[in-house]
Length: 200
Length: 432
Image (cartoon, each protein chain N blue to C red):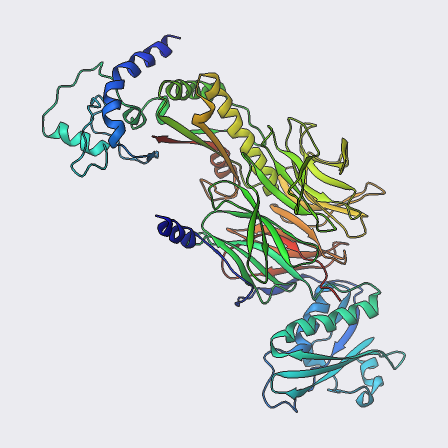
């Protein structure tokens, strides 16, 4: 509950910044390997790049490099910036599963609660849940299994207040392994749901 | 903008009519005791103006060998080279241990148009069992050779041959831009042709009963959707693109319906779709996974995979719905059913102690027999005459296609140089 309130206050404080950026920001997909901002406490002050294509993390960091900053620790971050943090639950975007199971561990649930709160508090954010399975057994059954895993994740996000419009699921079954190989190490890496964020 | 979009789609996806060449090669991996000895003499082509592009006797020989029922004499061992029955000295073939002998010749009617004649002879009874004459164009010589194999096989075994049929499968190239290719090839793996190329996964091909179209799952829009594609024209249409899963299409025996899996109403369930009226009918309603439907030959019921009991097992449900009845009880993992044409056998992926093999259930007795020896075998598919089962097996970093006889005694590998091959499905008989 306390966490929720914290998010709400961030959200309110961030609204102005978001309002400024919204017009210029086009849809941007965030991946885990995206470049992290150099200063995680950097405030989202709606720096629009010269060509008007939108705000990006490196542009913001550039302002910092130029020394024109007045950053406060309590400063609200944009959803984009929160997603670009390299530490904390939000940076954890892969949930793993046991064989032939869609059961979430308690650690996974804790991580997903943070994601759920974040999504609930940021209406401009949407997430695509991509379910996967290891290579063993039949392919269509594995598609269904990947779907069931994505649904498990979705339920937690919705329970935390994310809206159905923000959460999309798809299953790739065993078609797109994260790691090649025919052993438990690879299989464990492949039984997963990936959270792919989009900030609108 | 529209133009841009069109270009983008074209770069990602390419559907094509059947044309083009690539080959699989065959490797016989299991010998068979008690196979009937037969000699196939190279056909006489000496009167032709130019050499034939294929060796007919060699195609027939490898067809017959693959069946496991016949054992073809090595060409280098042939005691003579007759081309007509009246040139045959039966005693020599008898001493060479042969029971059957095939002789033949090719005439050229006009450039590129041939007449092939062959005779199947019984060495012990010293008489002709079968004689046929057939016209052939240059491009269908391979197909004519497979037809000859079918005639010989049927005459000797009493069962219709399935050599002159086609298979479909998915080939994945790990490092290429167009990663996924849906291909169709002759039953011996030759004459492979691209049906669809995409950089997103393609899955679960299913033959229409007339052999003219394929249904399949494509992720080209970044989610699984079901398409039907006519092979000769490459014309394709999306038949199911509902929210959630759209998967595992399977054509009804009369070609009018597709069974499929949708999760639009919650968890994956089995539906049937009338392909002309597009009317959907839901057959199962359970929070468990229900998937991989296949039709029984009478079109009255559907066999599918469900984990409603806790582990994935095979069930049967009537096309009008009702309560599904469990079919498999042995082992903790039985999925992806294929039903023999006579309905007596059911093959499946059978998981046991971490090994996934193809097993066959004799439905009347309930006996389960493991047919294969891989650890990651999948996608079993019966030949249209019910005598062989085609499947995929992962070996090293790639998947390969294998076919095994239903008694498990003869096995051959359709090997290949490039890519990871999976999800084979054996097409129907060519119409006579």
